[in-house]
Structure formats: structure tokens, C-alpha cells
Image (spheres, rainbow, N blue to C red):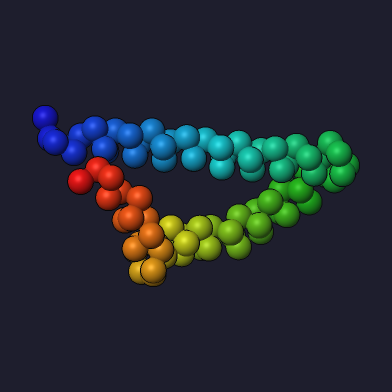
Length: 83
């Protein structure tokens, strides 16, 4: 078994957890718009869909930005205790 298997497994669990929270948040947004704000299904679906179209590229950008910026120096400082 690879020496990095433990780290890959931990990262996979973290990513799965983040995906679950993000995905359920979309349903909570739809629920809020339809029950609290009393919007019809089509209008609330359009609002959430447009929000996703705007938000997804920013998530992709910010996911890669730590490797391209000074944030990578600060995050690598947190891992120095492992050496």
C-alpha cells in the first residue's frame, strides 16, 4: 500500500463532506425560496440555477488560488510541524 494512502483517504473524506454540505445547501435554498418566500417552483429553480452558474466558476478559481498565491506559503507553514 502506498505511503500516501492515509492522506488520500483523509482528503477524500473531507471532499465528500464538503460536497454533501454544499449540495444540501442548494436544497435548503430552494426550500427557503418556496416555503418562506412563497415563490413558485420555476422561479425559485431559476434563481438557484443562476446563482450556481455564477458561483461555480468562482469556486473553481478560489480552489486553485492557494497554489498560485502567497497563501501557499502560509498553508505550508502549518505543515512544518509534520517534518
